[in-house]
Image 1 (cartoon, rainbow, N blue to C red):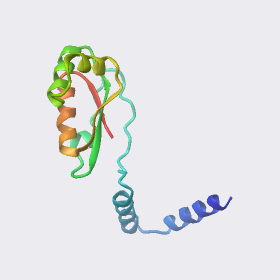
Image 2 (cartoon, rainbow, N blue to C red):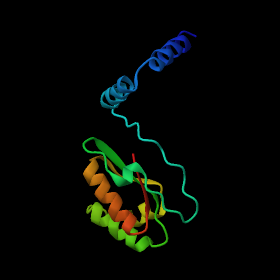
Image 3 (cartoon, rainbow, N blue to C red):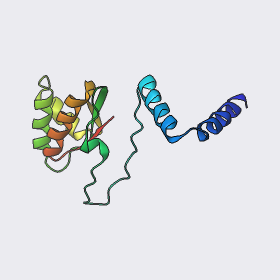
Length: 131
């Protein structure tokens, strides 16, 4: 019960903040906790392409994880892209990753490297998610 009252008080305190103060709070929480307040987009309707804020402008700094969510129809191109991204992968390992999606491809990499890997995999026809 004590935790519920703490949370309720915190919510009431946040309601009293100005927009500027709230923006500052969000930034501090992002920095302190290493999280992002980026909204999660709804799943696109079949065949529809949706560009999220993450696609439009990659987050500078920070570390991200690249997750292959679906290899798509052109698995050969995805396997080639996987081997280009991680040159330590053999053909069998890359094939297993493509067929076993969802799989983490890269973990703890810089945002620029994660965005580059995402771009290569999407160009090959895969569906990729950055976390």
